[in-house]
Image (cartoon, rainbow over all chains, first blue to last red; front, top):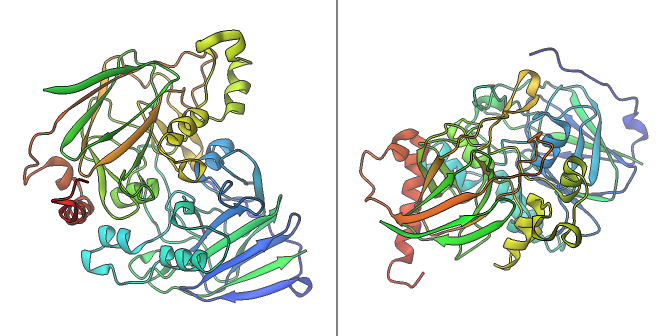
Length: 216
Length: 241
């Protein structure tokens, strides 16, 4: 694999409109207005940030679509320049800076039920991204629920595909202080689960906080 | 013994509940078909085929014999019990009406009658609508008879000429499964002529599942997902579900 194209941001965190720490195992739900920029900062390194986007005008009718996004850009990984598309082909956001190099959108979110299958039947009681998603949506008042949970982005996750049809979760390529930044091209709702997965070496079995920084 | 068979022409749709214990065979009679497929639990349709769980549990980005198609609830909807082609695509998705217009040119019912060009998105939305489902339910699908792989640096590559006349796949229902499919062209098929092939569908009773079943033994994850499915099915015993 050739070296990823790293693009740093010129935005100054001290000039941000909003800064918020999201601890591991927590959800974060925020509206992002057209033209605003969101930076997700990996504070301690190799933390998976499971993220979904909805069109704010009609959240149940328009959402981020992983397959439309990768097919349109003809690449399975996301990085600077990637346009994040909805299923109807509208651009929801554009990734404008990325110091990590690439991000996954095929690995999905962990759930109690899939943890059972992937690791062991007795793992069902462990906290998961889908638990965070479902609770955040249930209390949000947007009218969103399980039906609205589709394939998400895993920022900072390294899930390589091989030409012979393999797919695996590999050790992360992120590090403390790396970040990805995206500009909203329309008003969007951002739903994040800062992943609590304890069964996967990709985060060194140590889920850690991230910072959300928003600029107008 | 086949209990039902029918042909779905190219650029059309189809749906049916395949009850647990039945096998659906899908045949690409011409080698030009793409069968875009979504799966739901007909009793609780928010439970549905989950691309990510299917791929990560089986460490694969292709689907073939031995693979199971997982729901988001840690269960198995369908098992791929036979496959003569070796690779079916779970990541290419479906075409939009704009994609079809851009690639194949303008077409309309007014001009072309029933030969007008349809996209995967519109065919799915029509057929999903008949079950009370819609855009919220339009998740990542399987494209039977197509092959897409990630090359160097993740570049998506579509394998032209992958399909073979007579190729088939057999799907055993491990729980009742609503199968919704359409036969629009694969969205990455570079052909200039709009000529998607038909599929033949055949449904028959499955053989009893043996302890050494190939799909269950294919991966330890499959055995656990199958065990979860058995628990789900036992709660339906005695009901009409």
